[in-house]
Image (cartoon, one colour):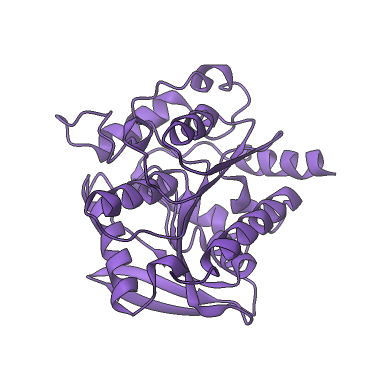
Length: 299
């Protein structure tokens, strides 16, 4: 049954030619995401944070004092609130928290540090609303996972209180593209390949920027004193090594890390939770992780 479901997703992705150009790619990811509509009991409230669009979402039983700050994937060049709405809202439901999804600025029109700064602005917005740092989980998929890590490291370096935990789904943590699974998983990954990632990185980063800079490749940064992390990744994705190397680096820095590798799953597989049982199970795991850490007594 599980294999039938993931094969259906693979067939859906293969049904049309891979889009070329930023406009076409953005339209395609929104089309794929919108194929699984948001559940009717989710309340959606659009807002703006410093000129950047964002959206509150809340399931009926959610605790408004706890928040999942969510950053979508798309290689810093595509993805949106719409494309990831089903994933973000169901993650919030599983966590029993409100979700704030952020439509950070996209490259190449807005290269680094636009998304990096928008992530900080979203965090500061939540704190200005009176939401305690330890009541906030930060997470996202792919590039959104990298942004989540970068935000936590930025807050730590500034001496500020950081989030209660990080939820990282198929995070893109190494823009140098040095992970061995970019080669070993190339034939089984239906979405992400080295040439595409190289194009995304070149669009996002200023020409003179070192791709090992931890603000964009957090795998190479100082991971000490970061909050507990849950990393979820599929075994059939080229970015698998971005996830498997991260626990080793974080663990060596005395950070609590849980790594879940889901067999036969593809990149950011919880995105397809409406039609993929393993996607729903992964979100349930993430929800329990977030809830257990955002409901602890404030010290």
